Image (tube, rainbow, N blue to C red; front, side, top):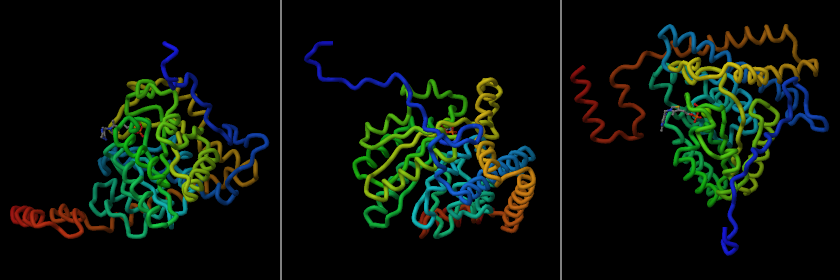
Length: 361
Ligand SMILES: Cc1ncc(C[n+]2csc(CCOP(=O)(O)OP(=O)(O)O)c2C)c(N)n1
Ligand SMILES: [Mg+2]
């Protein structure tokens, strides 16, 4: 290269070591402290266990033909719950992808709404007023510009709220992600880009998803910080998101947080991971289970034992069943429901379609 050339930024060769606070044995890093109180840790564990139990129930119902396609969260509980715990549901918003059930619950979305959504019922597509949750998004990355718009809007209205956009490493290859980052950097919108790197985009491995050594390193290119955390560590995720939330509220703008985690189950009920997943890799990740390490930590604080585990499992099973029972009280949809919730005030052409359709049925 000629010496006259301007300096060039070179891609980093080594990925940044993800920040970890709570190790696989449930031990907090020496010299550090848990960023969550025992009460908050128990609240988080309960949500994590609820999410995992809901996975099991939904998988079973889908196999019986009683539920639509379902995307499990098994393995990603710490990323999802640790981040949600850093929000104030009264002022802050989430724009989820499709695995963030416990984050939506913490924000106040009723379980029966999530169930109706999974059943394909139009009533499940309606988020109650006052619940700061955008509907789950299947079209990859489409929720990310929405989260930026929300955050920017709150900033302009001086509302002091922040938003989290949840998405996978695969979705970060979409144009929407890059456009959203650029706009957020320019406007200093108080948004957190919560990238869950679960190593897979269906059957596409992380290695061929992107040439970047580290997804978090993309952030400085848009003018804001990027943070890399152990996504199976509830405390590390919470701490990183809490710092990003504080920065956002104080006018410091966006943050990109890469949570290094692993999708332990199939992509969805329509996938067969045995065709492409390496068993040894999966086993190694299983040793880093996010729920297990929180339970071990709580046991070390005399706040968790087998009795409590059995009690909670029973309570959670009952809670999920109550959700399904409540969802079952909502009458099944009819043809007219297709035309509901499309526009606040239906357009003339929509009403025309509705009339024609209903005359035929
Ligand atoms: C715009 C768009 N393109 C393709 C798909 C098909 N699709 C659904 S999920 C998925 C992989 C997403 O991977 P990632 O963003 O890493 O999220 P993960 O499923 O791993 O949580 C693909 C390609 C889609 N839903 N939307
Ligand atoms: Mg992924």
